[in-house]
Image 1 (cartoon, rainbow, N blue to C red):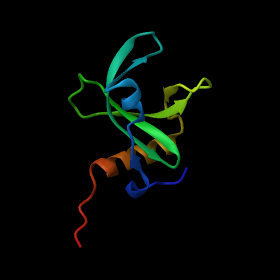
Image 2: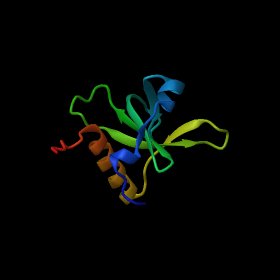
Image 3: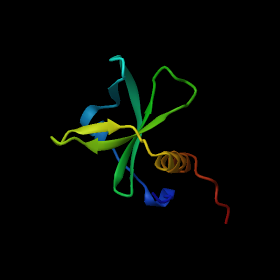
Image 4: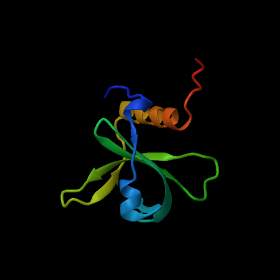
Length: 103
């Protein structure tokens, strides 16, 4: 996967329009947790969702891929590729906290 820049990304709201401002995720143990859907963006034809725990005030977030299931439903999937994870988290930081360009 190549590096992306903020000007190649587009903010989206597909999940928010479908599910509302929160999503429920189930972990390996079967426990369900609710997360705020902080942001969504698309880059390189792939959509990503930025999730935050409503109880976490530290500002930490998790980014998941938005994928379509075989029956056409939207699902969230972890980013297993380390390079993709690094590129996408850096891109989100760049989109959220752009450096000031002084010209």
